Every structure is written in structure tokens, then in C-alpha cells.
Length: 633
Image (tube, rainbow, N blue to C red; front, top):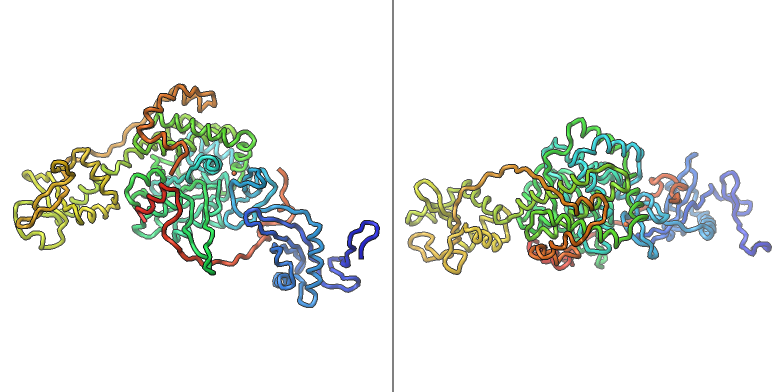
């Protein structure tokens, strides 16, 4: 029956004292539709219901498809009166409410996204769009206060270059994903290495604190290395701008090979898999910043190829926190005050920059860093990643008013890269490894004195030549044995290693060869042997590091105009290191309806777990990543 005054259908339902009536017939306790929500990530329409049970208000979120008799009967387990004999009345009553309820938005993933052409950032409350986080993967609801977090940073962080670096690294997540929408940049991956008491976990917590709970409990942003590779990767799915920490590699199995996992973490794609029904499952993707911590270098557990060092930036700081008391105050402070600064930083970016402007700033930062870096063939690619950190520090200083020492930050980045250049000479690392291996396993080599029958007496990997009591040369059969010896040190790119040794005059070679054809044992035919000279290794000694910046870098850090012609002369030099090939880097406030509908715990959703099957070990990476991964898979 319609109302003659309004033309609208008159409801046959009424409520009185919390009880629902159909006409004069009481049905049960009232159930109200509190919100009608569209999930921006899944496109699922959800309905938030409120009812009373035992004097307490209960709120449940159901899918719109559950607004049926079977769907509503399930609510009886939570105290609703939707019994089978009256449930069809509740169905009609709730559908009637839904028709007049305004649509609101929620999201279950985090970071940058677009809605109807509008860029916005998904945090607990989205920045740039009226939407609220209903996911269960991350605890990003702000706690404590921004003012207390800011005061903590001023008192305990500023003035310590390594803590300032760790803090800025956490903010990079928003910038790398935003710029990545315009220029392809992989996720940033930093490993903070050091002794147990050095403060690296505290530094990781500091970097996560602008965005959410910096802890491993209660779905905090700090995850653990304990678990399967797939489990670790699942923590990143759908993340396009909030940093994730992974703490303590010692929780992984002994002798873990991290090579393939590092590639996947940085490239930002899960393995392809099947659903239980045999259809291809959409694989998770991400683009963000990952902060790991370990006591030992992660490179000790990887394939020793230089390309991996482009993807993982390892930071072995001389110190992290200044004292145990400093670490304790920081840890207590960030566990009580978190999740405020990140959204403020994003809001500043959206109000003051376009993506094109940020890309231009990043390219300038990259040029400037490259000018002052010690260069090798990987420097240009690494400069792009470090430039994200430098630019982020500059933007954080402006956005939040934090007195970060940007000149020191630039020097810290150059120091990190200098140490990386020294360690990523695979030829040098492989030579040191071989000499150490020989010293530990000399019993598996025989001294070349023209004797016969030694090879058959046990495992023999090679032989050595001497001058008096001094070993002068190690000879290892080219086929089989050399690869076996180097594999123990996870060195697999043998051609590059041999070429490097030849250039450094560490090999004895026949003309036109990189090996010698010699008799390995008396009475045997000639075979190709790698003949490696034994020289005295220089001790690794700490070096002082200092760099003096010119007006170009100082102007950039001070946010003044930088004359490109001052650094344009670098272009010809950079081409020698592949710089011309990396312009696109190979290797995003009104109260949301959530406040009206109660705690996040009320929005419990049940998803059916899908059984995952591997389809193919190969993935559709960018061309370079695919080639690298196939080489190590």
C-alpha cells in the first residue's frame, strides 16, 4: 500500500521498545542496517547490521548476497532473532532499509589506488577518498598521538644519522609506489645487519611507526622470517605504499638460500597458482619498501651474483642506537604512538606535488648521487633506489617539519654504496673464497711433484704447485671439479669470475685461452685446468669516508633551483655504466562511516580458503628479472 501524499510504498513494519512488529504481530528483536558499503578492492557490496543480544549491541558485516533466508538464519549464532519461522520477514525488512541507505566505501588493501580517475591512498582512513580499512592483514589504526611520536623523534632520533636513515626508509614506501605508477621501479629492500644488541630491530620499528603497529603481534607491520616463502610473500599482497618489516633471519632454517625469495620480494609478484577448481588464480602483487633485519649478511645465504646486490641493499651500520637506554625509549615510544605521521606525509604529497613533479625531483636526486658515487657497472641502477631515500628525506622534512640532517643523509647513502661497491666485486669475493677453501681443504688437493696414483686415494679436487714451502698456484680441472668447489660458496656465474681473474692477472693461461692444457696426474692425458695464482691477500681494513658536496647537491637539499648544466657533463661518463639505459629504472577529511558503526572487530568477514597449486616455476617477470630468475631457479 502506497502513501498517497508521497507516492512511496508504506512499510508494513514498525518497531517499539526494540522489538520488530509486522502489523500488530511481534517478530523478534529489531535489526538495523547501519551501513551499505562497497569494497573498493573486491567490488563486493557489504551490509553492516546492528542488533542486541543479552543487553549488548552486536554488529556484523555480511555480504549483500547473504540478505536471504539461509544467510540471515546464520545470524542466530550471534544472538539475532532470525529464526526460520520468521526469517522471511527479516529479509523483507532489511531489504527495505537497504533501498534507502546511502552507499559508502571501504577497502581491504593498503597504499595508492585510483577510483573513478581519482588518486587516493588507502590507510586506516583513506587520504583523498572517504573510505575506511576493513582488512585484517595489517594493524594500521593510529594509536597514541602524533605530537608524542614527533617529540620522541626529536629527542631520541635526530642527530643520529643511522636512526634518521632508518626513519626515512620507512617513509619511502609511499614514494616508491607513487613514482612507480609513472616510472617502473621495483620494491625497495633494505636489510639492517648487525649484532643482536646493536638496535637494528628498534630501528626497523622506528621506520614502520609512521604507518601502523611496529610489532609482530596482532597483525602488526613487523613480520617474522619464521615461515614458508609463500607465507612471507602473502604479507605483502595488495600493498602499494606501506612499509613491511621482516625480523630476524635466524628464525629461518639453517643454510637457507634466499636468492629466489629476494627476487620475488623485490619484483613484487607471487608464483602463479591454481584455484581448487583448476582455474588460474590471480596472483598477488605489491610495490612498497621492505625492511629486514639479520645478525649476519643475507648475502651469505644467496647466489653470489652481482645483480642480486642491485635488488637488496644491505646496511651494516657502525651502530644503530646510541645506547641501550636510547633503544628502550624509542621502542616504548613507537609501540605507544604510531600510525599518524604516514597519512600526514601522504596528504602533503597529494596537496603539493603531481606525480610528474616527483618523478622530475627523483631523476635530479639520482643524477646528483651518481655524480658523487664511486662507480661500477651497477651504480646507475643503484643510484635510482638510493635517490628515493634522499628525496623522501627532503619531502619528510618539509611535510612534517622534522629537522632531518639531509646533507648527512646524502653522505650516509654514499657510504652505504661505497661499502656495497667494495663487496660486490664478484671476482674478488670468489678469489678470496677459493683461497680460504683451499686452506680449509688442502687435504683434498695434492702437491704436484710428478708422482702417480695420488688421485685414486680419496676425494681429489685439484693440485697445487709450490716454491719451497710457499704455495704459488692451484690447478683445478675445468670440467666438473671447479664448479663443485665454487658451488660450495654459492658462486654460479663461473664465466664472469674467470674473466675477472684473467683481467686481474690471477690466471696462468695458454695463448688465446683462459685455462691451460696440462697433465693433471702423471700417466694421464692432458685436460683443461684452471691455473689460479696464489697471491697474498690484503687485509680488509676500515676506511675513513668523507665527501664534500658542491653547490648542486647543497641547492637540491635546500630545495633551491639546481642548474642542470652543472651536472650535464656527467652524461657522457654515465653512459659507460649503462646510465642511459635506466631512465625508467629496470630492475598512493571527512569522517568515514566506520566511526558510526563501531570497532573494527565488528566487521568480521569469513572468506573461503582456496587451495593453492603451483602451475609453473617460471613467472612473467620483466624481461631482465625473468632471465635472472631462470638462471638461479
